[in-house]
Length: 529
Image 1 (cartoon, rainbow, N blue to C red):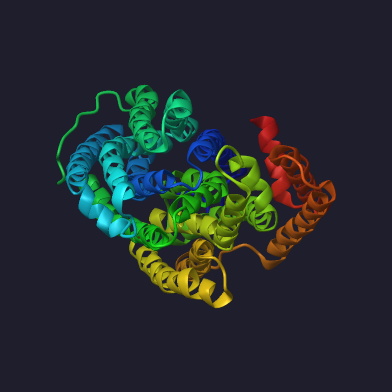
Image 2 (image 1 turned 45 degrees about the vertical axis):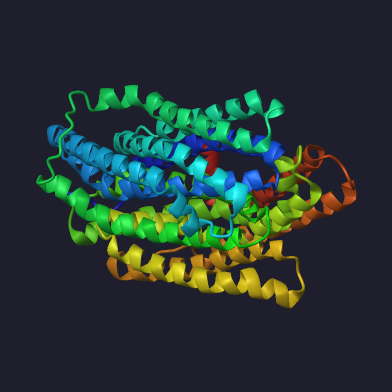
């Protein structure tokens, strides 16, 4: 029976796993930023850019509903527990059944999505009309099969993560991004925006196939001899399916939130939908890099914890608190940096081609609104993983419902009513939408934290630690703003490199001066990695 502590070796393995996840995510996100920069160069804030962003959001719901998040919560805990008990044969049978059932469901929804595309547009983007609407329908029909392939990629991720193979699964989206980049660079210079959007959509489908292909050889070695079957009466398959339902609904609630944002943005002037997409790409960078890396590495470890209830609770509390501090140390400066220096970041990434100076301002405002909830969103991911490790999928669903309700009500007020009251341009309503979502995320985080307290005890980031990292970030941001003002007008990259460099150096220097342990741990991990 395990002792009620987390051995230092296990903590290092967890940090090493998180680093591998982060490395894979960083590589894929860097390619994603390159993809978005090229997209901004060719599409800017145009109608074609709006159409592609809205069209991609619709099949992306399928990927998110059936993909990584749901499988991580429903399949990985069951599969990892079987591996922890050395029951590899039953693990393979469970994996084969889940893959078969998942493939069947994804195929049916892909077919339904292709056939129902015109009606989906009426629901998702009611503000689109004419050629913009027609293009969106065509793009949805192209993108849906690619989303189905990405669902299978998420199953591969579940297998690899359960076997502690983290880097490949999170680096695989590089292939998807590379295919889209190739499509834009190959056809963009000599193709109009509307036909180019169609070509880019086909590039995304090709990239989805490549993303599965690069993972399959490694997966095949791990589950050699796996057989597809629709056997759903197995105890372990039923457990995965029982988890799947509530998590599917929880992810569905999250998609409803994204749907509401996209719907409201479609009712705003041209450029609102794609502006939202540009900001969300930057928002997802620290959320994925730091929040997902820690939570993805911890979920299999927490799910494999065995022992008495009190011992399991103590181990989970220790792992959770350590992970929360890691996240806060890295995400707090990201949030403050986006708020104070977001214009520098946005210009460096997107200021090219038809993406102009005013576009930078709008995207910065939209990103700043989202950044208000960035820390809560990343910490909330780890809390949700702890619930899933305890086989509790109901409470995260209920808390997500609260967040969506708040996001909708506040989003309508901040997106439409508030800009009129302040005499702002209607496009500023997009920043209102993200601000509302950020505030609602803090409410969800508070509910997640309090709900887990009765299960494993008090958890969270100490106030003193939070004050240190936020204080260091604010001082660093002030130094960055001073340098930005002193430099005067320059090119996006000649401004970004020294300003963001100074911001990073000041933050890390203050962290070293305050002897924040997470900085030393990060340094040791990088040296040993």
